[in-house]
Amino acid sequence: MTGHHPDVAHRASAGFQTAYGEAPAGRWAAPGRVNLIGEHTDYNDGFVLPFALPLRTVVAAAPQPAGNWTVWSELTGETIGFGADEVATPGRVTGWGAYVAGVVWALREAGHPVPGARLAIASDVPLGAGLSSSAALEAATLTALVDLGGLEVPAEHQPRLAQRAENRYVGAPTGVMDQSAAIRCLAGHALFLDCRTERVEHIPFDLDLAGLAVLVLDSRAPHRHADGEYAARRDTCEKAAALLGVPALRDVPTVGLDDALARLPDDETRRRVRHVVTEDQRVLDTVALLRDGRVRHIGGLLTASHASMRDDFAITVPEVDTAVDAALAAGALGARMTGGGFGGCVLALVDADDAERVAAAVTAAYAERGFAAPGHVTVTPSAGATRLD
Ligand code: GLA
Image (cartoon, rainbow, N blue to C red):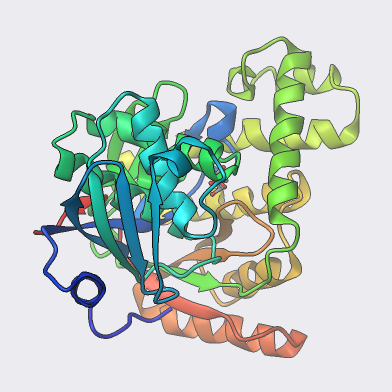
């Protein structure tokens, strides 16, 4: 998880130059994210608190005749092309190109005259680590096309468009958190998002001032059945809301939780609902502490969130539980898995001076269990999608 050299923006323009024999008209960047707290709450109309990573995806782009898109990616070194027909049919473009075609599709569906374009993509966001490399690609592509075409798509509408690309064109039933983080985050802040109203509040999250660091540990666990399990959790939540007669689980009040749980048919559904309702409350409690500048005090909420994901929502795996336990045993103030689950990354809130020691303790715990060594990096809250030049 260390940065590559040369720098990602340079790699995007160099790739553009090699693929198309000229310089790009501009470059646009969008970040991966970690979610500080609020997991599987977004598609339940609830609350989330992600922040953008310093790791970014960069799209270098220039216009070309309407109805044609050509895309080079450093991932494969290939150039792919597609036209209006392929864009019109979700699923026709596959692989990494689907995220790009999906964004073109979503913009056109919303009635925007998307310009034809040549694109070159480079990224520092690791794939398959649960850091939303797909949302970073969607957001970088979207901002590039909006700017190139002079399209009128206000920033607050962009996350839903990118989410539609992923839900409808790519076919992954995700919520709106990752795209919101990639587009709307501010440096030095976490993004408090109400996923029903899409109202955002930028919550100062100054780790340096507090003498703290967020350590991101890549569990390197293979994503076992992640897609099917994600869809199953979403389905259970939606059915439970219907049974309870509310539009979404966001509408189940924490104070009335036991009454609501008693009306559900089985223990598994009760646990899933309990996770979502208590997780929404943990987001609100975290925001309240951060507003008071009590950054150290959020640790307990992070750890409680992990326990809820492990015991009630059942989305953790031994590698992530091991990382959380080892980080806490080594003195982390709080630790939790971040993202959709079944692998991916763990974040630990640590005293800045402790980061390397905590990472070493997790590495040792992995070795003891015979797991492949975890990756680690400390991260600071960074900016959302932006034009570079
Ligand atoms: C994935 C999805 C998000 C969200 C998280 C879980 O990252 O893309 O929409 O549901 O899982 O919080």
